[in-house]
Length: 248
Image 1 (spheres, rainbow, N blue to C red):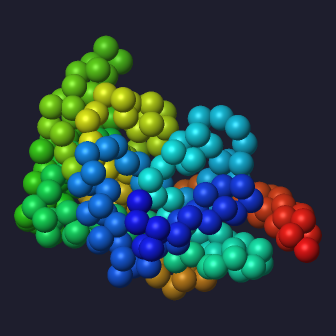
Image 2 (image 1 turned 90 degrees about the vertical axis):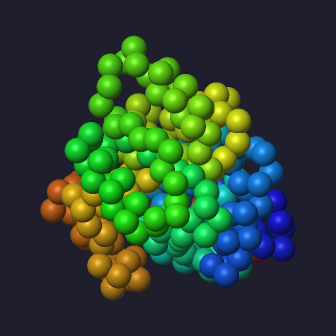
């Protein structure tokens, strides 16, 4: 990776990448052109705390080619720890920019996840927005367990530049590192609601909420348990003070 364009920070012993938006295109080009597999992780505050614990999720984050922060809490954490503040990315806009870059170079994408109807709508809208981005396949997350390896082989045969994985896929974001060995090269990204947003089944939080780190309020009516996010926030605050004191 080009260290002039990607600066990897360690926040609470978890990697977070500093990438200027103007450098993202060159970074993406370097990744898809080197003949290797690269996972891109969009990291939230809760993800950062999960990644501190030993296990599959931590291994996934440590092995990712790009770890882009999406929570304002992570940016504030970097400032509190007296580190360079990374650039925060809005998940949907980050994926839109990734697709724009790939379309510019006539690359390919495979869509995996969601329901058959919503996936079809997502494909239609993606094609309308990015007509030069070639969609080389799609499959919903609804399938018999016995059909799983057939989907893996279909993705392998299509060899997309980007595999975009969405809701419903077994294992969620961990599906990607569990199956990278089956693929030759490319970019791999999991987004929880991304295919539903493309299908216009769901919508992004308003920009003013995202700007102030309050995007969780948008999801609260359908996920009221998100109110309990103050508990990991308190824990992160305690950890932040501990790490800051250790550096004094």
